[in-house]
Length: 183
Image (cartoon, rainbow, N blue to C red; front, side, top):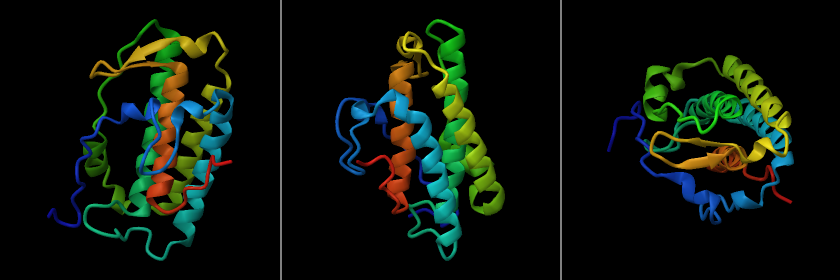
C-alpha cells in the first residue's frame, strides 16, 4: 500500500462513459444536453466549494488510495483548465491532437494536499466559469468539430463536453455530493 502522501495513479481509459452508463456514479454521459453543460459545470464548482467549507478536515483522505476533498477540488480545477485548452484548440483548428496530461504527475508536482482551500475554491470557480463560457459560445455547427487525445481517442466538441462533465460529476460522487445534474 502506498504512503499516505502518494497519489495512486489512475490507469483507466474512461472514454467508454460516452457509450454507456457509469456503474460508479450512475451518469449516462450521452444523455447530457450540450446546452446544459455551462450551467452544470458552474453548479458543480459551487458544490465543490460547499464541500470544502463543510468537511471537517479538507486534507484528510478517507483511505490511502482515495484523494481528500481538497485534492479532488484541485484536480477538478485543473480538469477545467485542460478542457478549456482542448476546446479552444478544437474551435481553432481541424482535428487537433491534444497534448498528453498526466493528472497524477500534476497532483504530485502541484502538491494538491498542501494548497490553500480558499484559493483553490476561487480558482475552481474561475476555471469552471471560463470553460462554461467557452461551451456556451459554441454554435450547433461547431459541436461536431473533432479533436484527438494523444492515445488516439477521437472527440467531437459535443462528446468532449459530455466526457468533461462526467469527470467533474463523477468526482462529486467520489466526495459524496453526487446530486448535481440529476433530474
